[in-house]
Image 1 (cartoon, rainbow, N blue to C red):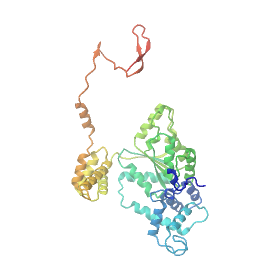
Image 2: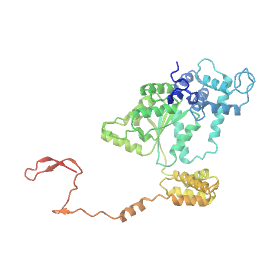
Image 3: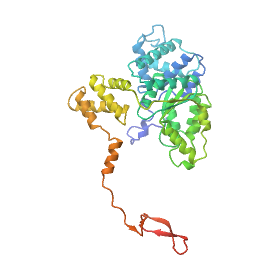
Length: 429
């Protein structure tokens, strides 16, 4: 029985449109996992997960159907791509076939399977072309490949603004759905973390769904042993506040749900990860030995990119720039606190300046102007400015001792000279 219906002319209610086919979600990962468990070939299961992953990407299955019809000829023999009753391409028929291919446990359209497998290979190859891979990118890809193949937990540790997030996200994209990207939310509650994992896998995560139900669906989706999860901003896995009463629920979940189930996982983080871990151990009784024992590999990245890699990135972001501009961008990124991110920031600013001047492409003057306007004061300049700032007048002294600042309010303990016994004094503000 449909509940979100309304008679014509009735008052407007927003939830009336919630069941519209335009808002239809992708294929549920827990259902696809059951179908994948019945397939022996790893490549066939990869094709299955590719369709499920694409169903949650922008455009969904409709975009995938359009790409398949553009890259493969229409079958004249029956039901591969075209309807048996119509020799012309039928996108809706192919869309239904793709959904049934991922969900129906009885039978398999081998012709459609071969098409999807072939297109997945082409799609991944096309994504790898034209991408600049730095030395840090190679090490990130190597560590994530190791985690996927050995089914272990890998920690990738590197300084901020060196391209870790982009390289990890790019590797997830090039996996074709076998490595899922999850950005750990900064909120310390467990519900937001479980929902982020569910969104990365492709599960319904509506607010009315209980966290325990979503947790069970995540376990079902990972039972096929095909998916690897990449956690970016992994330092947020540790509690961020009130450590005295905190329990690392997210870390415990990864150990018990992922590591114990042999689900490969990658933690991408900054050195802040170790700081948060040390603070938790210092203020609570938590012992990290079990977590450290489950780490299969720790990949420590360099603090900065080489000049050659910076030039490659600059040339990729500004393909029309001359050699002098590329050199200037690389030199700017070397001394900037933003490091690699400064190249992207300067390029966007230069392109914006060019558009506002009525030009299509940014020139060397635009880049120079953007660099001049975006300079961040260095630590030395900041310290110098603080040293030259006027200082506040010293407080008056009484009896050779500095006067204690008057409290803002509340109850304070003040000793009495006769007995030295503390008494409570209410100080008004």
